[in-house]
Image (tube, rainbow, N blue to C red; front, side):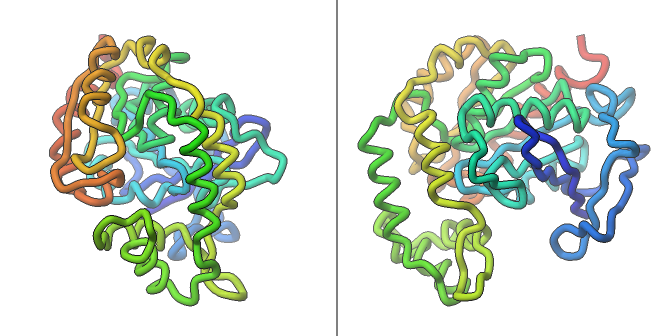
Length: 321
């Protein structure tokens, strides 16, 4: 089962949160057929729109909030969220400008806005104190929120996100890359082939990368185009690439796991330095995985993070000392 729950983010931006798997008992939603989600699943809202009790309420599973990276969407977490939902309440958020969340042309795409959105999601969904799992940009959002609101975050998983500044050259490369996309794509097969094989950024064929990008495309009158606005993605990215984020890492007090793919963008030396800076940092790496660790190697990803999550969720859960 997949259900959608609306969240109001910073500045009133409407955000879509997705719960994968059966919802915990005693936590029914009101299904709204006129606002059906993907695959015909209706979208529930908590009765009266009221937030749930902190931590999911007495006897309820500890909460997990999953935050995708730039250009991603909540559905990229479906595999992870489903195995998490066997024991925990796992919710993935479509962040502003992404997925089925709102994309207002004049909305803020700052670090402050993304962090405030995640904070609003934790509070309105009643997940706190929760474990945050973030990939790339979502990981940065997660550790910035953990530093600012330790009362809301009981654990943190940082997946393939650098703490160092990337600089102006990196931003120019991304702008040029977006211009190189052969939009519109005639078919989804063309999407998979271009991003999995023909994209100049691809060193060797990578079917999982093609599938990842196919999931962020939608059919338009002239073919397949991204569900996001590339200009909004660049606006989002420019708010972090010029700065380093080590100071905020040092302020994270909860248990934190830094995960990298062996062929990802986060190098081993920087990842280990991030672990050293984090007051309660741990390290894991996944073989045969690139930047899209959880998508490239879902079983290796699970094996890397599950032991950490078991401990962090016990610590964050109701009744924890």
